[in-house]
Image (cartoon, rainbow, N blue to C red; front, side, top):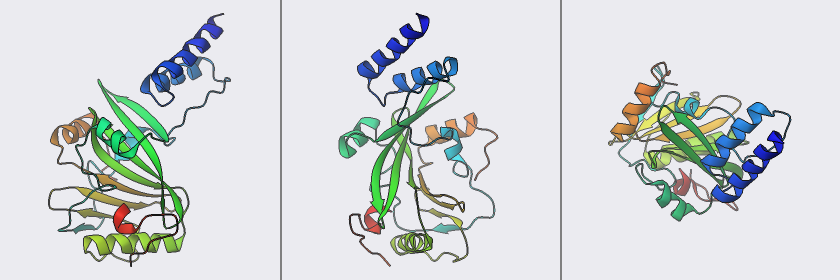
Length: 229
């Protein structure tokens, strides 16, 4: 009876709060910890902890190239500091979500499907205190041509010249906004971080004291690199 009651309560939370709500997300986590054999799906943006996505952003990784640009850095044409509701009004309903509690605060992540260079990509928006502070393009598949095209797109848009052999580098604009191009060899992620949101930046630094600071073409069915990057 206890199992059936908790399952019914879980279903109610999904119906009442929504299938991508934090209330449903944390209820699933609690339910799974007690009943791991029961399969209940949640459309999660990614498997790793949210806080791990801040690696090499709150503190830049020493030794990596850092290129300065006079162009303003935006993520999907959006600046840091926009509210959760503003992004949802612009982008519509997200495809997936993920949440993590950091002390007394909640970090929200919502993801949307997109296409770059005919490759499927997830565009993730990260929020703290309902404010957008980090964007991330997560490529689910890519090849050498994709890597070169994205690198060339970033170079053209931000007027920089990168080391051809470097897999990881930063781009920093005059406001302090940062792009981190991260090719790990098995995944490609392009992060857009806005540390000028000082309260959020300080909170992340204080909350994660051991954090290790870790030619344009328009593809069919996708956007141009200048529209995306």
